[in-house]
Image (cartoon, rainbow, N blue to C red; front, top):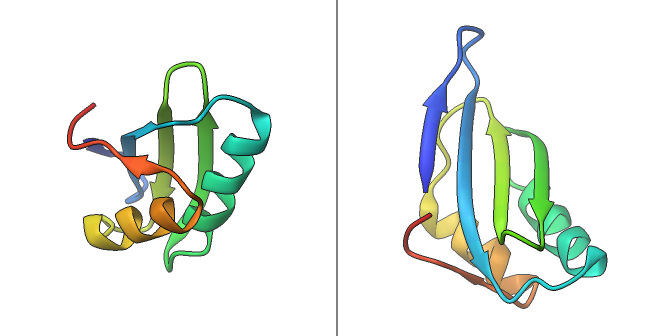
Length: 79
């Protein structure tokens, strides 16, 4: 996971998710993570396994892990 705070106060975090292989996978992961409080955008890329999340504040990793698990995938420990 890599985080960066931008000048407007939002936080961009890149997570590594294993098991995504198609657009449906991207949608499932994005849909679950987008329901977390404070999330303003989610972009999942199956080919790289990266999920970029923009939120108002840093997200609780356990909450992100639970959302990814709910979508049927696994949050990797590092990017």
